[in-house]
Amino acid sequence: EKAFPHEMGPGRDGLHKAVRAYRERERGEDGHTYFRNKNRKVKEQQEEAVKGAETNLIFKNVVVYVNGYTRPSARELETLVWRYGGQVEKMDSSRVTHMIANTLPSAKIWRIVEKKNPSI
Image 1: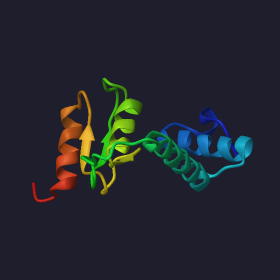
Image 2 (image 1 turned 180 degrees about the vertical axis):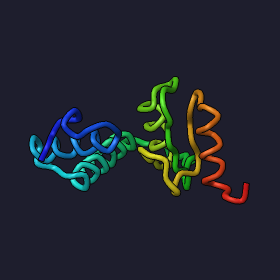
Image 3 (image 1 turned 60 degrees about the horizontal axis):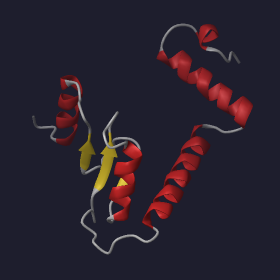
């Protein structure tokens, strides 16, 4: 199997296949293993952030997605959300109740609005 983007031909699919092939060959992990490991690491970070957490659970039932560059950093925002009882998603999903971003292109805003409110 070809393993580099220039061998895969043009387009995004070729790059994705190359990355998958690299991970499987060099690290011995497929896509499922990668996301399982990523989710485990996020859980560990959350547990570390919650140590000595506040009793104020202002973010209880809140699931946050930090999109792009932010100030304070995404890591700091995630730690605050975890510390005060919230959850963090690393990708936008149906579980997300709040998105944090400094700026978003209008096309992305419309995609989000349409996904959350299909009747628009």
